[in-house]
Image 1 (cartoon, rainbow, N blue to C red):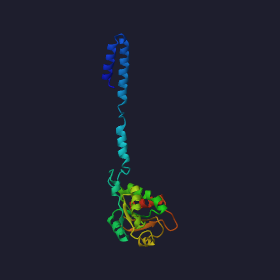
Image 2: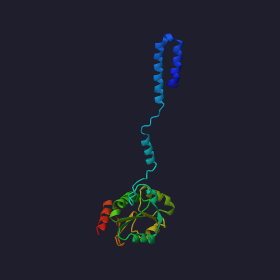
Image 3: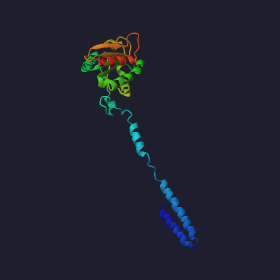
Image 4: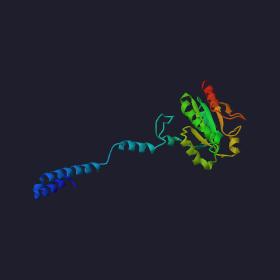
Length: 221
């Protein structure tokens, strides 16, 4: 009941019983006070609503990270693609990057060591691209795992040139790309596009420090 309605009702009661005027006035004040509190409690709190809205927008776009190629946020996931390519297409991609040091990471989602190394490959791309490093990844997964490979690349924000072998996960891919041992395998090319080696050497394992040292030496040439 509104404050105006309460006042009208209590006024009519007091006019019927004038002897109880002071009591009526007291009851009227209490009733008006109670009605006012009820109105205030019915108003929803607005504090923090803008903050919650902004947080909801941010949470809906978890991939809104800086693109190392442009320095801009947003649309990074859409830029990450996967192209089918054999040795000839890889060679053409390396030639297109003359003037830069090129590292090619041969990997696969079924290779545990590859998956463990991959974040470091992405980190090198992000940190050293402006110094002249170009990174190319070549997946040796089966072609029917293409969606799985692309999801992995996007999850790791791999804005590198990403290729997948048309020969699948068998030895045919290993032979086609002339890989000297099991995955992961890295190949390096100097600024003239000449092959300058690969790692790991047979019987050894890949170490991040060794990769970093090799790239620094090539960049310094």
